[in-house]
Length: 188
Picture (cartoon, rainbow, N blue to C red):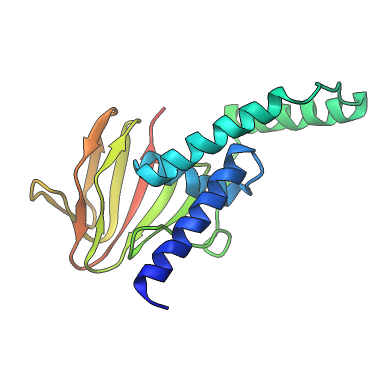
């Protein structure tokens, strides 16, 4: 398969994911991947999600609302209460190495592994990989676990280094000559 064919297939996959994401029908791990691509500022993904969100909104206006059966309503409310309780208490969540696979991004040589929702994840870049220009709508904390990474200003961070980037900035491309693994956490 040549590179152009592979790119077209990745775009088709992104468009399908965007459609399902807009309907809330994408599995959690794939939804996290879409949200990561949106946060990275991918113009294709952003346009696709905006398009399908408008379609989904129009679809929702064309149906008559139906009151859910009382048992379904109770089950949904109980489920929401349980999730809220986990988020607001001291319970722990363990993510083992085999629990969540690495997910390839539509950026050559870059993949991520979600750890907790879409706010805490590992990012891995192969040697020579370049992460393109992207927005930071939230403050980002980044700890370099392995290898090194260099930003467009020439600042190189190595394993053991930590950086915090403020929200609402645009980050120019970053490169990893030797490859790297990063722990990324988005602040609220």
